[in-house]
Length: 227
Image (cartoon, rainbow, N blue to C red):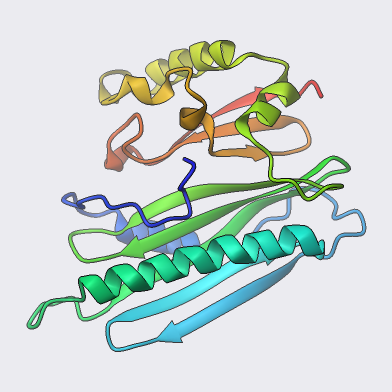
């Protein structure tokens, strides 16, 4: 999703998922590859106010151009969250007295060509559960340019049509009748804008509700790298 770090305005009506997301976000990050002279650190931002709590962790690779862009994206997301809270704070007498913004990262990859990390941003704005958005922080290691879905397609040597065909087949086999929006995997670059890079594969992520219901969670389909 091109606005994956911006708070999604989704009405949350189902139950039981927020505790699972929160538990997932407490796990320490896993570094998938040798850092190869890159020192990965964890940047944090924490804030307690009357109407919200912010508990943020995000990766810094020690590469100034990349670190600045990650920090900018995270701070933009926090700013949007605060604006949303200011426009619609917890109502008086509500059982929910504070909204929450939490982020954690995982699946860190550092290669000669690229660096990548999965950043999970979870917000709770009332209702039965929060909403988690998975973000792929993928950058060209040499230039600092943020990678696009087209870069991901080149890494696996496939066209978007070929990727979509395989993804739809795999999702159908896994989810069957639980697919609620098959068009969420159509060959449109927006549908494949969230992805992760590792040494041997590229993994495309479909957010909750993009192809399947909240209870099914985010879906992932991986392809072997050839470049």
